[in-house]
Length: 514
Figure 1 (cartoon, rainbow, N blue to C red):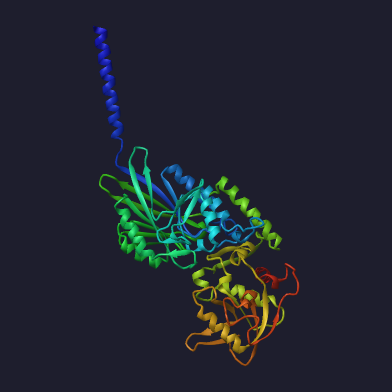
Figure 2: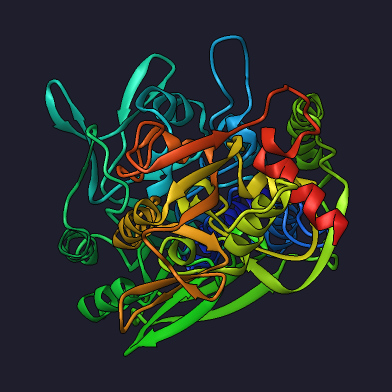
């Protein structure tokens, strides 16, 4: 009987201990959870810039590794613009197609990008190319206001995964659980600027659609966040409409910034992963309170390059170097150190004269040994959509003007020159807006000077132009058949060292001669 008592007591002790253990597991959830979001935007370059000193997707991967060691609940997001513009994207991939963003998707997959939204430059590439890139991606896409126009009607963009068609959702929810069992749902909405019209893309009104998505998510999730690709003014307007979304992570603007509209924080990092924002979000499930902190981290020499991602980057940069060298360029050749960044941002070169635009046109003028009066180029030739800072290499020049192109001297009447300049001025905000050298415009009198002398409609001028302008596409008044053209002088050989054969060669030679 005594032994039976012992067995019974031991059994009861075991039962109570199990019950107690189960109870302790259940009570382990403290109702507090913390996550990290790593944010970048407008990343067109996979390799470090400024002679390897800043940026690079391998540095972003290393920063992510460090944060991952701190907290396994990390989400890495890219707020639009990554498939283009990129000089590597213009290079051949095989006999049939060009790279067109393959390199970016490959590197992003290895970097650990989790979530992206569309930027306007995603639609620079062709419809089938974008579909291929989406299919190749291992990260989640969301699109609240941008849709695919097909023969069947307007539909969501989609990803083909293992033969199954998955629509890109309007919103996305990140469901997180920490080590003690606390759970949280974070909902994301997006908004993309409608600045790149295509006949196969439908842009619905960004802010109203984002607001509708925000309102839906507030009923379904614990925290609602924005991932947008808008001008900062539009982001601020959106913030006013979404007061319970504590954070909007934006793109499109290329300089780092942080703004606050009431309780909503808006952040943007520097383009090309020169910096990244680290957001730490703490949420209390018991009282519903959420607190956030934000830190801008410079991706520079203080952060090492992740080894595995560096291998993937090298695969693509080696291919690019091979292609560039075949064109007569030495990508790694250092040309100059600049104190003031050369401004090639789209919002700048398509609206005003910039120092990069002047460098291009000045080099064009110098490419012709005989006398000329001025030079012009369409701003759409400058596809950098960024600033060149610090150490400038041949690769930077190639990046700035990925399509290159020949230049020519056009002797024309002053009447035609005035017509061309007037039309270029009317194209402000578009790629047809002109950058120029030795030309000035007086806004008050709407008059022009060439070499500080008033433009004379009766005089003949020697104007250096990109041959693209002679197609009459951007500037309708200027083509090879235009009335007022007297003579056109062009290169008579295919020498890759002839600056007339490639505007980028002209710039490289000009900078080296200074």
